[in-house]
Image 1 (cartoon, protein in one colour):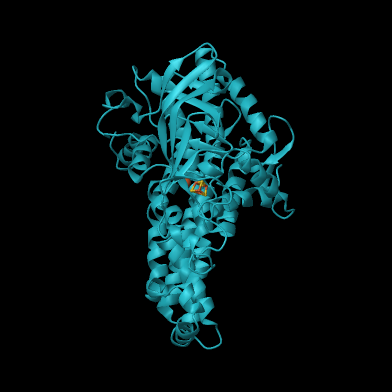
Image 2 (spheres, helix red, strand yellow; image 1 turned 60 degrees about the vertical axis):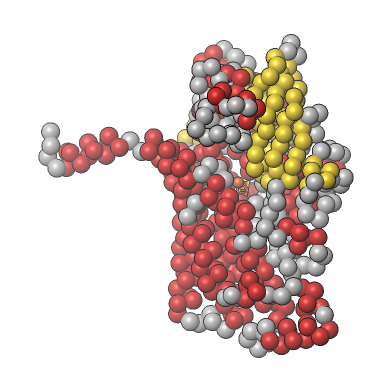
Length: 480
Ligand code: SF4
Ligand code: FE
């Protein structure tokens, strides 16, 4: 397993092509806007070496028998699925942001299952190629971006009906030694912190859309790949220096648009090419795993937000007000409900034909559907208790100014004995999670990450067997 230091060093050598604010970024790893998200991924490497977290953070590889970072593991039982959720909650607590590494993790497990099924049905050899690839990932302890979401253009048109055929990523050339792909993947979490990109189709493809049914892995620095950094609220605060106004002193997340401009992929890295009838399976499984994930990571982040809210109540002197106590209980109830869903869909998991365990898909979709709602309510309650100062607080530099700072410390004091700076720090953290930098990960990502709410509702309707429920009712009511 790589150490955090080795991980950082390995990223430095990649030299990927990244645009931000209209400029090419020279040093991605040390860029003040990007670095916090790399720090969050580095934490997934660091914790795996800490004895008290080893059990959650590492696993024994089912492929090589060696100890590996859990983020590269294939789930070998229900216990692994549960440990995944616990690991994600831990990392959410540790970083208070999206630590990005779960997307590749979820992609490994989904691709493993589907390549096996494809080979069984069609006599292809994708599974063996994928296992070989994953063995390399495990041994090198790589961070892999699982890339699913296509730009999609006009949503009322199929991929093959778009005026611009590149709006869904596709194969543009098949050669003897590999394929050439063109298109883009949007909202790619952790792309700049990744060694590899594992690309999957974004929807179930129809007959005639075989070019779009493609799954492959490429090094993140492959020829023809371009990244454009996605802005986040208050992102330039990271350029100001200081440690208060950013809210989270060390960690962050990021998303990018990844452009594939005629990228070559050798055959040994291609895990689906034209088998459109299996593309829907891959999407469903990957989405299922990532909907499970949110029951862990968002609960961990929620723990930090609840803690910050209880802390600011103490700083404000409101902690004994009965409505404040009740609101905090409500936040805990909502947060634990998300976790309970993550644990539930894991504990009801089952082995698939490849041996890799899959979560209960209905419960995983219920989990994510709750995530599209509860963090919003938790954030609302946090804002309620924090008070308006969270959004009217002057800058860190004003606090440092000899004249202004003196007045700020005097008039923005809460209860006696607590430095005004502590109050400012906690308010900035709440701002960061509810409407600032981490709000991408806690709020909007809760809505759209791992699929927008309607995508879960479709899966819930498909998985819930309404006919069986009608049968139950008829029998109880005495209808033969
Ligand atoms: Fe992991 Fe959560 Fe970020 Fe997805 S949103 S990559 S599950 S931390
Ligand atoms: Fe996500």
